[in-house]
Length: 256
Ligand code: ADP
Ligand code: MG
Image 1 (cartoon, helix red, strand yellow):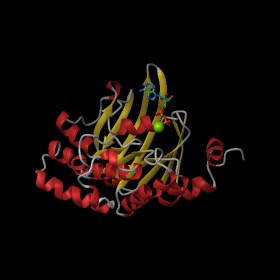
Image 2 (tube, rainbow, N blue to C red; image 1 turned 180 degrees about the horizontal axis):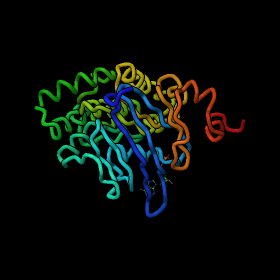
Image 3 (cartoon, rainbow, N blue to C red; image 1 turned 90 degrees about the vertical axis):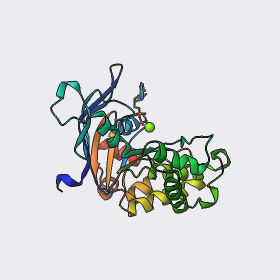
Image 4 (cartoon, rainbow, N blue to C red; image 1 turned 60 degrees about the vertical axis):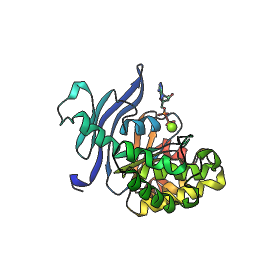
């Protein structure tokens, strides 16, 4: 693999909250067009890691590069190429997050939820943003919901709006933090099937999930985290059939 295909490069990333270490020496490269699933027990640092990638949390030390541009770096090791704050904002809009609880704007219609950031952040015209929003919402089967408010939607529909909203920013990478954990079981598949399509279309995705079947079928790479450490990075067929650590073995087959 040449460097060109590395979209996110994380080196020696550490994060503590008031002295409590939550991420410890995280090193990983995310390659363009791949789906990476992050698995691990609750409290292992998965959300904090994702939040560091789009700068919702600031690392305590270490370096994050997006397309080769440093976005997160400790003051101790300022030896990389530093981006101007404008360039930083651009880099960060290249990485969008889909949250467990959707985080839609309740006072905006479905279409407005999808168009507001392209208009305000990317400077798109209203017409252009609406055209794209309609296309995206059609793609996730919500073309008949353009003008309703989020509270009238099911959880699965809300999450599909949230995915469209993220896609409207034309991001290089989509981050998902347990996107189906808040959904009733019958709605999980409608969201996962949208994500499967995105993976097939070559979207670069980093997905924190407990959906083992999805991870096994769709992921190019499984990252297993435990207590702030990356314990294993393996292709799914290795991870699920022959995990490299005892902790991962217990995680996959508890009680065995
Ligand atoms: P996961 O997503 O794997 O469940 P998190 O990243 O949410 O794990 O949390 C990892 C650890 O960091 C937990 O012990 C959690 O309590 C702690 N933590 C997360 N966010 C904060 C915060 N804002 N302030 C203090 N501690 C936090
Ligand atoms: Mg979490």
